[in-house]
Every structure is written in structure tokens, then in C-alpha cells.
Length: 285
Image (cartoon, rainbow, N blue to C red; front, side):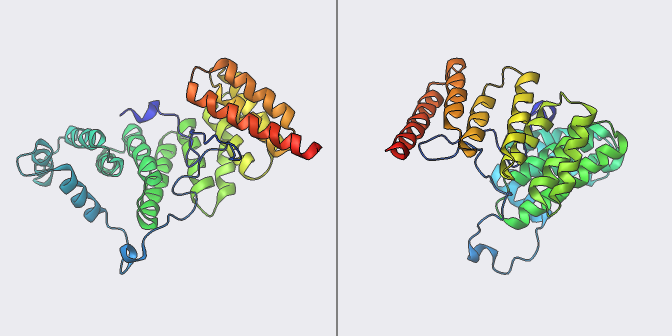
């Protein structure tokens, strides 16, 4: 897993739910609002324990005394100064699909060497663990850990705009300080107007706040930066729907269809267009 290669859009995912009568905005993922948790599961649970998380993850992953990862960890517990062992264990967790555990090991390494790269590796994985948190306590722990890690990155390198973008996303979508996040994202696009991910997330945030004209500006900017992002035509179309301009919306959806090779998406867009035309026809009767 190369965290730096992933385009992070925070809690607003890039997936589009397309169906008649269903908005085209990204689905609301865990973290955007408090995850729904079974009351029995939460009974008596007052704090998240990273130690328990790691142990339960090891059980699920089938760790035992003979496992290579267990051997590496034992060496660290006995005082090994070979920091590469942290990388080896973290990569094992990446392969197992447990970003929270991978993040913890990169975090431990970063605490020892204060490396921007290691703090960033921890931050990326904590970010992903936050989005997939099984309950509010787990999500909250990884949110806090991601924010701490990204702040460490920016202390070492204030010009790391990717880290500042991710930090802005976390504040805007995961905390009670959304304006702090929006301010960070605006700082990024001021420093680099062609920062695709910052422009994209500012567009999503504009949609969520009902500023549809601003959202269109952001999505058009993303298209200008990266013409291959044909999904922007869908988001622009939905912004037009929200403003009541269904004709312009359909134009945007048709552009998307002409550029896309995704037959399922085209089928879903067609269904959405049909619903818009039907709604228009019923209002004219």
C-alpha cells in the first residue's frame, strides 16, 4: 500500500449512488455522522484501547509465535534498534487490510526518528482506519491519531500541501471545527490553485452547505486540472439539479455518458435522466 498514491477525499467518497430520485452526491460514510452501534456492543465500553485492538487484530489475522511478524515484534520488545522491523510489521498489516494496526507501527517508528515520511505513513493509515471505524470510539481514536500525525508532518514540512489537504478534510468532516478544515483547504488552493484534491473536497463541502454555484466552480476547476476526471460532469449535473436547472443538468450527464466506458454507470445515469424528464413532464401538465 502506497499511501501517497491514494487520492483522499476524506469522508466524502468518490463513489456515486445513481438511481431515479436519488441524489448523485457521494454516499455518506462512517464518520460524517456518529456511526450507528448496537447498544449491547457499547454497554460498559467507555474508552478505545489500541492494545486490545492490536491483540484482537492479531487473533483475526492468525498471528502466533511462529509467525514472522510475531518474531519481528518480539525482537522489538527485547530492545532491537532495527527500525526497519516497524516497516516490515506495518506492511504485513497493510497486506491484511488493517490500516489502524499498520498506522500504529509507523507511528512507533516515527516517535523514534521523527521522520516526515514515517509520520505521513502513519497519518495515511490512521485516516483510512478512521473512515472504517467500527464504532464511534474507534473512529474517534483514529481521527485524533490521524490529526496528530498530519500535524507532525506539517511541523517538519509546512509546505506539504497533501498533508495539509488531508488535515483539512479531517477537521471539516470529522470534528466540531469544520471552518478550521475549510481554512486549511483554502490555504492549499491559494498556495497551489491546481491542487486537485483540495479543489475537489472544497467542491464537496460547497455541495453539503448548499453553495451549488461555488461547487460547480470547484468541479470545473478539477476538470481544468485533470480532464480525465469525467465524474466531475456528474457532480456538476447534480449541482444544476439542486438549483432547479434540470436542462443544464441533463447536458452535463450526457457529456459524462459520451466520455465514459462504464456501462453500469451509463445505465444508472440514463435512469436518473429519465426521472428528471418525467418530473419535468409532470410539472408541465
